[in-house]
Image 1 (cartoon, rainbow, N blue to C red):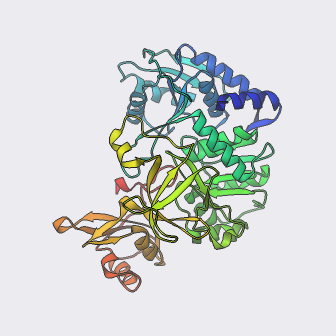
Image 2: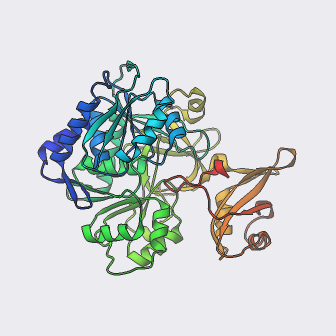
Length: 490
């Protein structure tokens, strides 16, 4: 069964059940089914063979869900595109995906037109409004590209975030995503009575797979949020008695820092997790102190889907861990030779999963570095305890070589973060003399803070070769939409 088959069967069985609630507008599963059928009909002239890629550049909304399943129904491959992209970025991704069509909301039609005008063979352009009504704006002139025959058809054409280098193409199949969603639903005991907060962008795996697709997979109700506005989110969870919130660390920090006004009640939430980057235990505790619940750490990637989640019954004592792997997922911690390390020993985290891709699309060099013997080599450093719980400790490629000593940036960041004036910090390598690395710290501080203060603060806490020799202060750190620090921009 494909993801589309599952949605169709569920929509016909639960047609009257609310599928998406967006402000004052309610879309039942029957409504979404009808809207997706209309989108599919509009796409049919441009998706003449299975596997045609269709760009989906629509904000979190019922229209996004209808367009997504309309593309799937037409036999297309969904290529999610960030609504913040402008012409230059859009041209790159449309050209790279060789999209047959692009679906946008009315307010992005002119931006899309400008991008398409620069392409020799532009894709068709379709607009979908807030009521999920789809119209053809232009037909384009791209030729049909026959898709290769495969056991499981592709469903998603995504890109790695590019936080550590150039984005790589990731193509996931119906079978891979179906496997992930089944295991995720079982881990969280998700069901038709759940009410999902759709706060993370549907262009990213956390918002798309673990929220939008998870909600429609189990027949639940989705409440999409186009922009994360803290008071609106708190009001929505309180008023609609939402049960599921999958967020990113910055969201929990923002909510922890929000002064409470009026009646805020998050007690209806039974599934709360943070993904995409580590949520610091202190930030998690601050969130819990204000709202009475802790967020679980979930570990996953664009390449593998969801890997593990901390389902510990006593979450307060294991906040830093990402828990045990989902059913059927294998996780090992290995040394530089690929041999498993001892319990509590640090090494690279490698993953084998039926939900994972087998390699990047058209990138043999990256494949040779990242995929070995059926395992995806994540580049993450971690350790497993006696229970098998995984704790992430850093990034392999971020290690700093300081005179032959290996410095873990996360350890230095933790030391610097303990300074009362430091709000955010990232530590990375800088080129030094004779091929050696320097330890460089980029800091966002509250009030005035000097490099000398930071050095004096670090000296009694970490070894001298770990103390930053280059310290910079900035107003903000560059981040992706999911809160990952973009080290390539520092």
